[in-house]
Image (cartoon, rainbow, N blue to C red; front, top):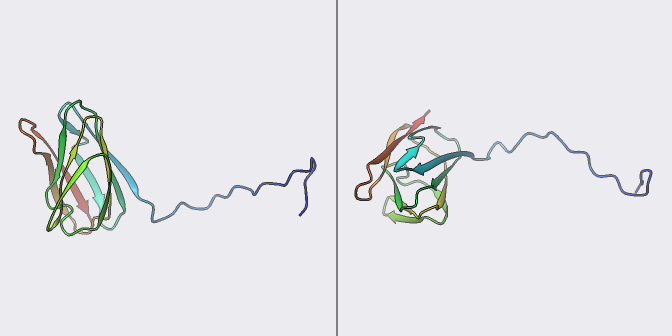
Amino acid sequence: MVLPFGGKPALAAPTLAPSDPHEARDIVVNIKTRQFDPATLSLQSGEKVRLILRNQDVELHAFVPISLFQNATLQVSGNGAPEFGPQGLLRILLPSKGQTEILFVPQQPGTYPFLCDLPGHVMNGTVVVQE
């Protein structure tokens, strides 16, 4: 080992290596004043996505994706309460100030609505998956 002046080992030089091409793209949806923001999400088929849902209200909300995750492989984390059925993720209940992350790869191009199905909450949005 060669020690530079001062007797301390040299640290490896930082590299400018490209980031992992399989890294997920973060998409944040804030829930505030009974609205999803943004209400329209644009995704690419085959792209790894981390959908981050943040409930900034003081009341409980739900995220109900219609057919988006049907038979899909995904990972759900955070303090939301996911509900699953035979065909996959049905909804996530998000507590006040709660956050849930859904890691997935959309495969099927199309337009997929989502909503909050709690009584009196007229909240909806759309996920558009492009080829």
